[in-house]
Image (cartoon, rainbow, N blue to C red):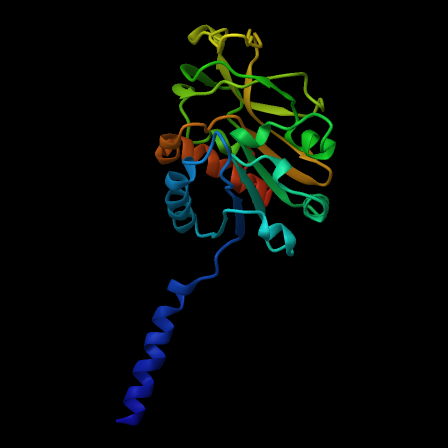
Length: 255
C-alpha cells in the first residue's frame, strides 16, 4: 500500500511539473497616481495581470517608488505607466540609469513622456522627445508606419482612437524609430483651453517610437490617457508588443 501511495505521489508530481513552468521574465510596472491620472490604474492593474498570465511573465505592480530603492537588475523591463521620471529622486535615479546602462528595457506610457526641462536630462533623452502641449481629448485616426516592430503587430493599418494628442519638440536623437503617427486632419489640433495654444505638428506627428539608449532599450507611446483605454484589446496588444521588445530586444522583423 505504501508503495502504491508513493507511486501516485510521484506521478502527480510529474503531471504538475509543466503547470509550474518557469515564467519567461519579470516586469516592474510603476503606476503612481498623480493629479491628472489617478483612476486609470483601477482598470489597468487587472488588465496587466491578465496580460502577465497570458504571456507567462511575472508582474510586479508598484503604487509608489519603493522598488527603485532595491535591486533593479531582476527586472527585464520597467514600465512607467502614466508615471513621470520626476517621481524618482536621488539614488533612485542613479539606480535606473545603472539599470539601463546594463542593458535594461524601459517602457514609457503617456504621462511618463512629460518631463520638466533640465530637471533630469538623462530621462528626457531616454524618452526621446520634449513634450510641448496637447489639445482637448478627441477621436483621431492613427496610422501604423512601421509594421516590423512588435508594438504594431496586433494593430490595423489605420484605426480610430480617442486620446490626448501630445505635441512634441524636435527629437533629442536622430536614432528614434517612429512606429505610429496621428493624422492631424482627422481632429482639431487647435482645440484647447482658453489662454493656451496648440497648433499641431504637421506631418509626421509621431505618437509611438523606440530606440536604443545608453546601453538599454526604450519604447515610448503617447497613447493612454483615459481609464477605459486600459481594457481595450488593441491597446493592450500595442503595450505588450513594446514590453516584449523592451524586455528581450527581440521581435523586430528584419527589413
